[in-house]
Image (cartoon, rainbow, N blue to C red; front, side, top):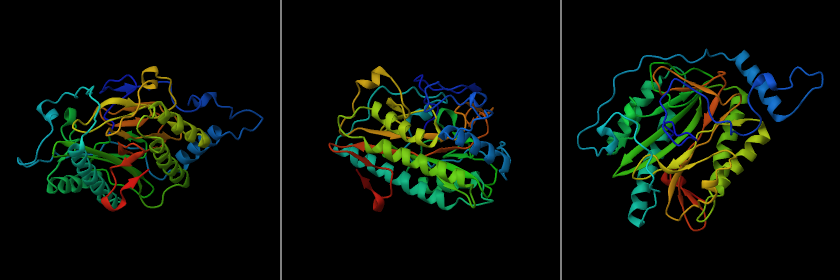
Length: 352
């Protein structure tokens, strides 16, 4: 769950934002691409630009507009609540790495397994005419009935229990009265607070008959997450994550958005802040993963630009060109030989 973690290592809540220039591939300024040249170019980036144009021209669904946001849902008094609810300000990023002893790992696994089950359930609700507000209410109910707290609710004033980001929404989408439509893609981002630990995960789901170019974007984004996780192990450099993801993205001509992963555990957001694109951060160059450490990887890919704008609600982030964005996220635990993906349902727990 991003909540505005950017390369500047601060939390934002602004109106108009332009990300760092450090994203995968060539600058996404369409006017600079050689499309008008007499000589045809078949580079991956040119093909993706043409795909974006085609997708926007034939899209059956109109651009996103803000629907009606219902009142915040309540949480029973007996549910343990995270400390950040004491104020409406965005919490500062903790400088403490989330490294756990054996008891902490057990609790972390329980929180992440619950988050995964909730996300799986939320995915079954994705179909035309269902509102994102209905998904939020169902997610909220399942989390509360499991004895946990929905981490997004009240985080810096966020009004809902889950993030639902549809089509051109990159992240932080606030559930509202808009009905899902045939052909939509929706990222559902679930985080739970259970017994003092956060589990954090997200996945992009297809709603009905989805454009082939979007299906491909979804597939490649999930592959990027898998490749990022594949190099994680005790002693590995964090810089290698962005490198392997960028290499995969460039094969397809997509752009990887410049927001980043983060430590997660007893706090929702902590150091290290992990670049998911090719970067030359000298601080990260000397930072290695540690056995017992937990953090998230959550790449966002776009067909078009990575520039973005913020709605007046100061949370919802959309691509500036209206092109689609896709995200996947897992929480992982570093082991001596690899990384264990914690945010999968128990029967699907994966080790690498």
